[in-house]
Length: 239
Image 1 (cartoon, one colour):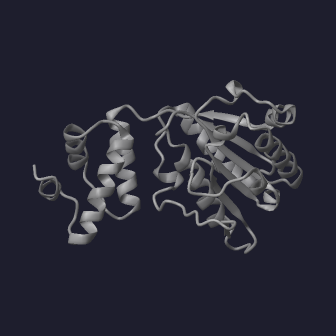
Image 2 (cartoon, rainbow, N blue to C red):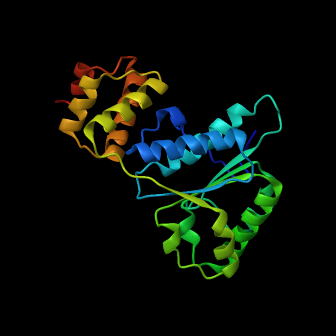
Image 3 (cartoon, rainbow, N blue to C red):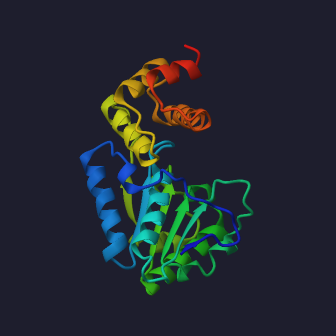
């Protein structure tokens, strides 16, 4: 069961571990270990760090989906995804109360509330209680957790059990192509390498910007009921 609390927070369809492409082999191994720990371990805590566009949100949502799919037969598995940077949500420290009962908690952009005493104490309590319950917690942060300016000693102590994974944005062309192909295949579009290389040449080699272009093409493909081919791309962008 995916717990949404009183909030309407959905998961992106493309957010899956098999559509994530790591920048380095070390990161790939760390992510693989994280995925395995969702199945085999109890009381594990990870912090995904890295700049915007490094894949932190993708992995948090992938973890929620994977955990739910792996535990469907139990009928009691639960996970929650909580994006703290979403200003449209009425987020207060009290929302963390009781989350220790959830088997997997994924909190996005947690560094947004570092320095707030109430949030820090609530989070420290969540870590301690989740560890006692044998549950799992994943957070994301742009800033390295060692650089946080923590004001509550309770949080500084609790964070000692959190294992950091440093993520990096995709910059190599081959990796960007691979990531976009995996994404398109997972959604049933099967975009060719030729088309992806054309988009990189015409628009950008920034993965986040290319994702925005891809989403536009996917929507156009659905509306016009056509495959995303090179002629179709040129037609859409009037090239």
